[in-house]
Image 1: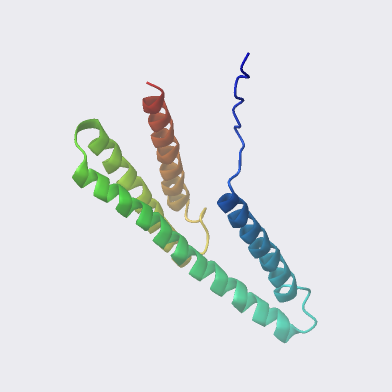
Image 2: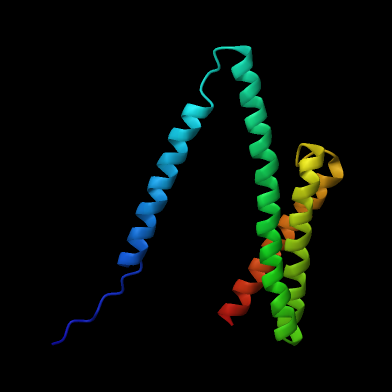
Length: 144
């Protein structure tokens, strides 16, 4: 009798192990940097410097995030050109969703919060619901 091979659902390749180790060290380094950078200020000057650093991180982080969302939108833009029918429509919806979500991050920098003004919150919520709907539709089409 031959043994039936067992499936390894969570098998990790050596390359994946290396990437996970690098990610672990990056996260530990980020944690140490955060602790050193944002520890309790001992003077008003240190507190003001921390506020400036946090504002810079918030601003640059939102611009970077907007760039990431727009890069994702661009990949769907390429799919619009290369596909037809239902796939083209899905790619168009994904393109618009990710583009407008990235644009909302740029507006968020100007307003200072994702929930203020109220219409920005509604805008972002609609984008998130659209992303969820696109994901559900994609998963359903794969199972058919």
